[in-house]
Length: 229
Length: 395
Image 1 (cartoon, chains in turn cyan, yellow):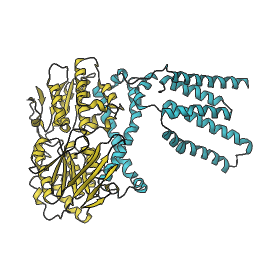
Image 2 (cartoon, rainbow over the protein chains, first blue to last red; image 1 turned 90 degrees about the vertical axis):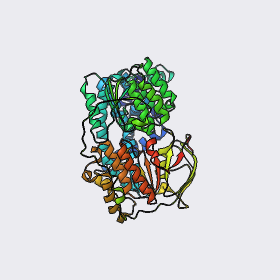
Image 3 (cartoon, rainbow over the protein chains, first blue to last red; image 1 turned 120 degrees about the vertical axis):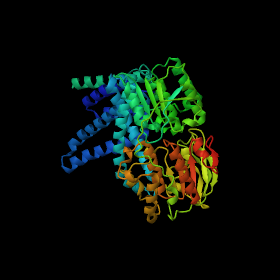
Image 4 (cartoon, rainbow over the protein chains, first blue to last red; image 1 turned 135 degrees about the vertical axis):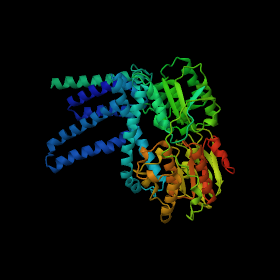
């Protein structure tokens, strides 16, 4: 089950609009419960947990800590703060659904979003550069292991390698970027990116239609509720 | 007939090839240069091998494209269609980039030693294809150090320019080592070792072997058969799923002591050289016998003619020199065993002979040597090399 690029945009625009208008913690919670399995299906539960652990949880903690330290967290404000946190959680879920694209559909998605020529090449290139960064840092670490620079495999030893990894990593990426851009020019990859037939997603699948429906219902419900109040 | 450029290292052949490409370069033409290390020529815009092929397949309906794709299937690369191109072995990457750049139908294609990593089984159909004038293929100029090994008729490109500023032979220096006091190797054994990058897809299956010190072993096998993976296992870079290693009869967890017993010279020097100068690469602070290191470095620097390059960044050196620096760095960090993965890539016959002599010298000093190469000429220089063939993940 793959999400079509137009569905991604719809989820982002309609979903976020609904969230901004919504003032009900329970409704946000229900919407998040619907969106969370879609996000997990789009990526993996591991990535979702890591993101929650290292991004959302610290953000929430900082938010409450700030109000606790400044003494501004009164009991009547508590539900308001919770509402903001809930909105942030739902919006980050929607952003992840929209922008975490399986690598084989990256070209198709950006093309459908209207990018072409140089802008498409830059976007696709910058999307894949993260894969490159991970692989390159692994290569540097392996090289250092192979030379016997790292005496053992403890977590601390690996952390101590960070300064030795970062500098060659940056130099390597810049060097590769320059070589690749030259190669892309020489091969005229830009025009090929616009026309080559990569893997596509059927936007009329039941899954995509259901997502559209959920988001439309969500935004209409919140608009009606907002203006009726 | 294919046009070739039969010249030695440091004669400016890479510059010549690039100049040949630029000579007629027009704004909308395709002028492609492919060098020794295929990973540098993968587009970086495709997450899978299939997408890399798609990105280059300019005329999918043409006869030429059909033939190229059928060759790709014939050699079995279609089984790797879902893999990331950077995860392929060196030989597989070479074949992929050559085929992709034939598919893109460039106006001119310069191939600089890219064939060196291919095994004979893959080279033959590839040369059959590119020699065939029926297909609509780019105007190609090939420079390679192993032209004589390929069973192809070449038409030579006239080339008289010569730049021998760095041209040095290091053969005479080899036996001037004196009393360095190399560490003697102990026997190395593998017992039922298995490993795979994914649990359900083993690359090395139940391998057992006893390597004796002072011997030269030639680890051969087809491209993608797991030679480099096995070497990395021996070096302690990967953890085997099962099985064990023993050094001098004692079982050792190599994974816990990476790079301690075996020195590994990577196929691609760009996977090995990450420090800011050649000097830093050679004067290492690994687990070597530090007190002895200055003697070894001095010797190795002379051996590989690196005196004038000590303060240079390895990335600024030509490929041939980077490969030499990676060999030198492996030797400087002295170990009982050495694994040389394609040590002669990009090296001409004089340098190949010299590397051969260095390896023979190391074996005489009691070191254990494991060689991985697809050069039949190179391996024939060793009279007593023990052949080990890796097929389907086992010996």
